[in-house]
Length: 182
Image (cartoon, rainbow, N blue to C red; front, side, top):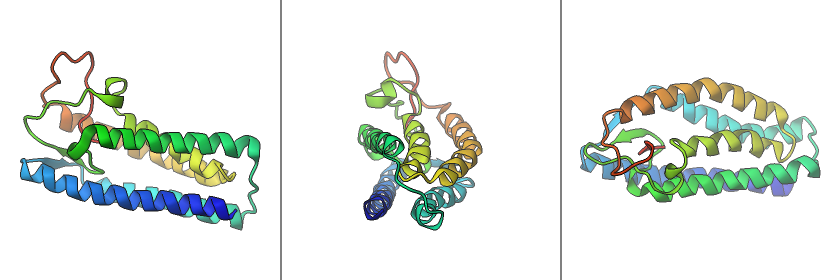
C-alpha cells in the first residue's frame, strides 16, 4: 500500500503546483481586466477535492481495502490519463487557465488542443480522476461519495462558467465554442 500512498502524495503535490500556477495566472488575468465569477462555490470545491485525497489515504487502510490488480491497474491508467488531460488543458490555455472562473475581456475563446474536441475537457479529467484514483486501491466508498457530491457541484460550476463565457468573443472560424477557463 506504500506505493498507493506515494501516488496520493504525488497527486496532492500536483494540486499544490496547480494552485501556484493558478495564482500566477490570476495575477496575469487581473492585469488585463479579468473578472472573477462564481467565487461562492469555490470553497466547496476545495473541500470536496481535498476530501477526495484524504479519503484515498484513509479508506484503504481503515477499511482493509485490498489492491485488486484487475481493477487497480486499469484505474491507475485512467487516473494517469486524467492527469495528462488536465495538464494538456493547462498548457493549452496558458496564462488563461485557472482553478477559479476568471474571464479576460476581449480575448477569444480557446479552440486548440483538447478544446477543439470538447467544451470543458478539464471537467472530464476531474470526473475520471474522482472515481479512478480511489479505485486504484479499491476505495469504493470514496469514489462513490466524491462522484455523487461532485455532480451537483459540477452542475453549478458549469452554469457559472458558461454564463461567464456567454459574452466572450468566439474564436475565428470556430466549429464549436470552447471554454477559456477550467
